[in-house]
Image 1: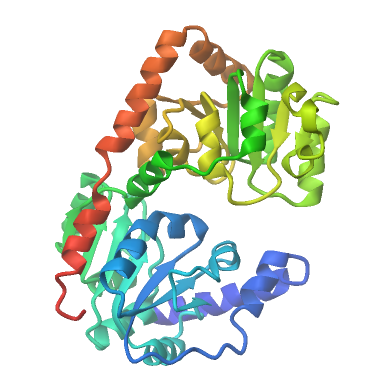
Image 2 (image 1 turned 120 degrees about the vertical axis):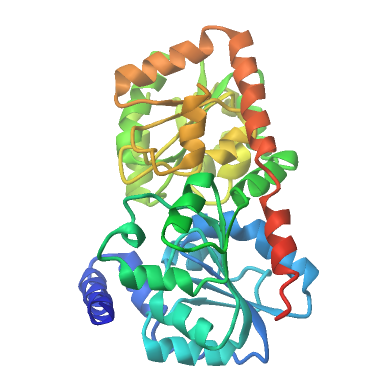
Length: 409
């Protein structure tokens, strides 16, 4: 099985190489792993994140660890360019790298260089050689905000190698009881239900969000519908909703902000009433007359929700929805596409009628109409969503209480 694992990784790299000729992200993935000289540390704490979303999820633990263990260097690795390129200069780390390909030699070389006394992986990513090398060197390895499903390879008859990886983990902090039960059913008992550290992150953000004066001017006295991390499939539906509701204002923050993507979106919207955020500073007194603003940068979305009363989260017509909790922390009822089942918080919101899954324009219109029909009902939903987020905070404290008692630190 290990032979197939190693072969599969090499095939993956070959496919990335082919894709790099026409895909910028694939090119960055390869270039970021080429001829890297790793800084030597006498001791460090290693935090690994698959991508930007996992970084934001693990950030409360990272920040808390940095504060409590200021004498320990922090090394961060990312698998994806979308995480590395945006957070490569984070002041929370002493070094930030792409995770080298998971081979036995790479694992030895990297771990020998950074000399971790602890390793923390957030939610996803299980790498055999890295886990094995950490285990061989008796370095404690923690997985935080983990979540497991019955259909994952760990629980299949052919998943022996992956179950072995789980055995290398010192302790799992999982999001729900189902994950704990699945692990215990295969003999993994070093597990605690701690919830999801994202709740701590989004709740803290909602208590002190960044302010955007131009958005405040745009939103003043109006009801604002905010769509975050949208894809073309989402935007087709939203464009019709905007046309049908000329009395409301809309903010759309696309997942991809390439020029052609932004131009395509603007062309979908009613002419002369939409503008990109980077251009509205020159509109002066006309800002309040706009109906739609397209956010053409990265970094605003998590605080933008403070200006809205209803949110739409994109990705549900693809592999899965994006971050719903950022909007929920501000008390916004949330609408999203049909592919949300992998996300516990989305399932919770739907089951409590605080979130609404739609599969087409008709259902989007119906969900929107339901929410705006009664202001008292909308306010009640808002309060319940805030309560849901607040009640699920505390994961970071639990994780840090366990980690900080580890004698290896």
